[in-house]
Image 1: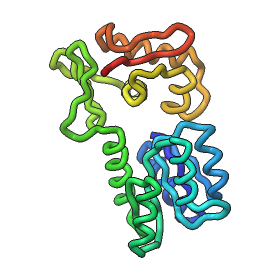
Image 2 (image 1 turned 90 degrees about the horizontal axis):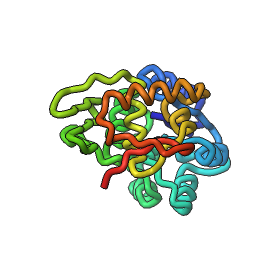
Image 3 (image 1 turned 90 degrees about the vertical axis):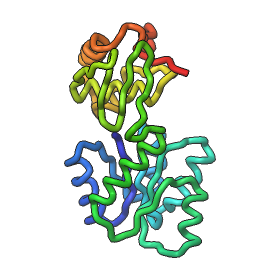
Amino acid sequence: MKILLLEDEYSLRISIKEFLEDIGYQVDCFMDGAEAYDAIYEKPYELLLLDVNVPSMSGFQLLENLRKDDMKIPTIFLTSMVDVQNLKEGYEKGCCDYIRKPFDLEELELRINHAYRSYYLVDDNELIDLGSNTTYNMTKGKLLVNDEEVVLRKTEKDMLEVLIKHKNSVVSIDMFQDEVWGEYVEPATIRVQLKNLRQKLPESIIHNRRSLGYIIERK
């Protein structure tokens, strides 16, 4: 998961970044609201962690601007505010959760996981039907084909989850590069990984749109 962190307190920002990267997330950090806002339009982020009181543009204003542009990304506010009206304002702007400072980093991890599952409509007991008697549980990372588990490598899981998240939309090589690796990777390497993934699935699951990318089509 690629996360944008907006936090102007240096020590807290570094602690959060190091903790989240240690457990496998990709984290871009900002201390200025306007810079964070611009970055969201330059890279695909799957979750936002926003401090409220930051320079240039508050976390509240940033999220309000995103919602006006119909940019919907699950968002958690990091704040020392305890006033109910402030909490109400945040939810009205479109956040899915708050975490009050100071907080335990393991609590932050739990809230991130919950926000992600809730936003992308996945829970622990729900299997995503991919057709052709194939299901996938994004929480457990478990793929079943004809009721038998198929073992996926981490990169294969990540690529399948990107396709599921963007189902009915074409996922380009650049999108895989950004959302799975977070840095430049040779297109040939990405295509090899896709070939390996497709070989573990029925042919009808992932379709190639020539010169555009790949797609999972489901109602």
